[in-house]
Image (cartoon, rainbow, N blue to C red; front, side):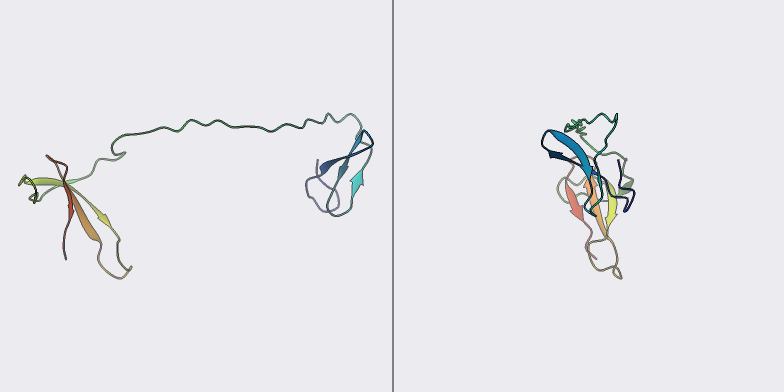
Amino acid sequence: MFCPKCGSMLKIKREKNKKYFSCSCGYTKRDIGDVQLKEEMKQENKAVDVVDGQDEPLPLTDAECPKCGHGRAYYWLVQTRAGDEADTKFFRCEQCKHTWREND
């Protein structure tokens, strides 16, 4: 139920075993009529999915891994500095999964 004066949600108040609606603007509605009052807390239990790995495949490029010497690596770009400067290019070795970044 909402207040007809200000549109706020009416709160349930109690006075001597009687319940009525009240608003912060001062409006009260003592005649509740056939309205069924339910006071309950609703708890939502949402499951959290744990996903291993990446959602999207990364592109491959020719880049030599400094750890194992493999010649191909996945890459992606990240804006790590100010917006007017170039992106930082990160690589992940296709073979040993070592991650490094390109120095500009």
